[in-house]
Length: 419
Image 1 (cartoon, rainbow, N blue to C red):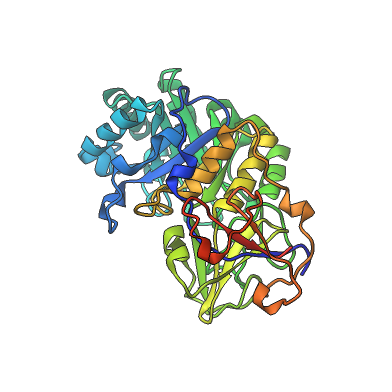
Image 2 (tube, rainbow, N blue to C red):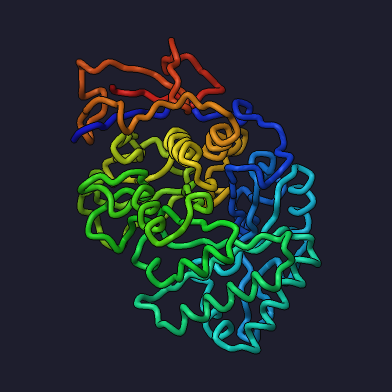
C-alpha cells in the first residue's frame, strides 16, 4: 500500500532522556492529562501513586469515583482516601493539578437513576463538592459512559442536568471536564452547547476505534483515515465536533498507552478470530519478542504481526507526531489512558516521556511522516526488501548515525525505517 514505513524496536527510551523541569502552572497550554487507575495497586509490580511522573503532567486524574444508588459516593478513594491524599501532596509539590474522574467504562450504571432524580442528583452534587473541598482537589472529570445504544432522551437530559448543576455548585477555581466519545455513534447523544458552556475542556477518547465488535481488525487510534484500515480517526474527530460548535481551544485528544491484539489476523484490515480481541498494555507489547513491528505512515499508527495475530498500538514516535499535531493546531492538549500501561521498571514511561518533551518544547523537529514518507509495502519487513535503504531515527524522528543493534544506545528508542 502507499506511504507506509516499517520499523523494529531496538531499545527502550530511558527516562533520563526526557527529564523535565517541574511545571509551575498546570494551566499552561497545551494540557497534558494522565489518568491514574485506582486499581494500579493490584498490578504486579504494583503501580502506586509515588510512581506517577507528576513533573511531566499538568493534570492527573484519579479514576474512579461513582455514585451509589442513594446519591452517596462509591469507590476506593471514597472509602479510604489515603492514597488520593498522598497523590495530592505529591502532585501539588510538582505544580500538577489533581482531579477525580467520575464513572468510567463499565462503572456508570448508577448515573441514570441518580441523575434522573432531582433529590438524588442534588445529594450527589453536594457530596462531590464537599469531597473536592475536603481533599484539596482541583476539579472533577465526568466519564459517564453509556453501555447501550440507542440512548433514551431521558438519559441525555439527565446527563446535561448533572453537568450543569456540577458547574454551578463547584467553586470557580475548580475545573470541570468530561471524557467524551470521539465519533457520532455515541457523540450524537450529547448536547454541544451544554458541554461548551460548562466544561473547561472536552476530552475526546480517540482510541478504542477497533475491537471485537468489528468485522476486520483495524487501527486503534489513527491520526488520519486510511481506507480499509481505519473506522474513524483523530482528524475526523476534530471535523465532527468542530462542525457541532466545539472550539478547537477546548479540544483534548486521547492517546492510549495500550493496544488491541487480534488472534488470527495477519495485519490491519484482515479477518480475525471472533472473541479474541483484547486490550494489552504497551509495556507487554514491546516485551513480546514474537512481534514484528511495522508503521503505517498514512494513519500514523504502529502495529505488530506474528504467527499468532496482529496488534495495533501507540509507541513514542506515533505519540510524538500526534502531540505535535495537537500543539501546532492550537488544540487544548493531550490525555493518556492510562499512566501505568507504559510504565517499565527501571525505564519509566516511554510514551508519556515523548509526549511531554513535544508539548513542553517550543520546537520539536519532528518530520510530518504522513506527507513526506515515500511509498512502501504494507506488511513487509525490511529483511524482505533487499534494495531498501535503512535509516535510523530516534523517538522524535531525528536521524541517528551508526545506530546498529550492537551499539547499545541506552538512552535512545531506535527505529529501523524503510523510506
